[in-house]
Picture 1 (cartoon, rainbow, N blue to C red):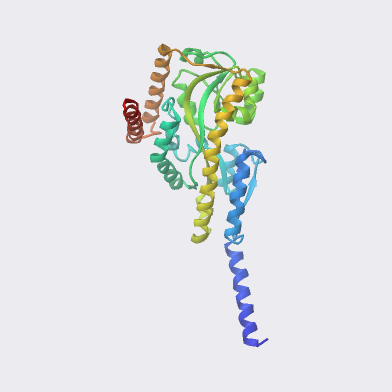
Picture 2 (picture 1 turned 45 degrees about the vertical axis):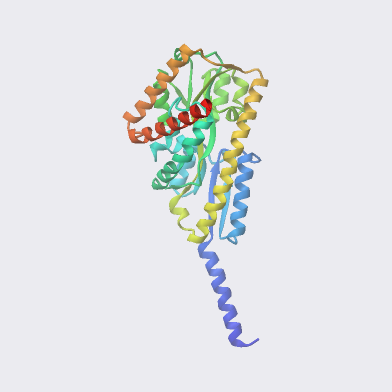
Length: 340
């Protein structure tokens, strides 16, 4: 082989290996989702595609099943650089971007059709707000409606006040919201909820049907108050500083692939939630629909809770007005359709 050609070949190999070494980024991501779950399957599928499309310049290492602790612990480990991101519930990020709780205004939505319309117009606001707070996300993952689930029947707000109500220990905004109902909540980590239901420390929780089934809380509850209390969502949040270490071209690949993967989770979550409702009914859980007179009390308390979120500076009045305007549009469209 010609010496000149050999030198050029060696130089090319050096450039190749040096470039791969400099730009190789391994994103360490933690989640409570157990291995083998739909969430993990779809995130791992997306991670595999990212690795293939970037020639392993960007890879993911997942810590599933809560091995890195709850959301609070995961966020602490992200801050010190032990982790680079986590699949976490929205409430856990409210300390960084309070308006992330826009959809968690109590009893704001009455149907998934309303949610879909509002999300189409307002998801980007939350995504941008989280990025400004230091987290890159790839779209919101809908978790469905949280319902009040209890060991005693709850028809009225006063019935709720008399219960021992759980609230996530790392979600101060939700704690403040539930207090608007006159409730003094009992903050606990998610991992402690099932045993606390068994022991009687708490007797009431609020979560989605699929969440209750996956976490096995449904084995400890007898009643569900059939009112969509709040709309839940989660995100795959990656530390922005770490994400920006990835070259622009590869960042675009990561964003494109993981956005598609999380969209699949978003869609599948809704289907699983419907199935979970049937599972709860089959198990004998009783769905309680409060009579109209009691409904007025629930919705009035929900309005007070939303107002307090504005007064506390969690949400701006302009932002709440935007959401309300979208809801009015949905209602007007529905009324027009019904009149035809």
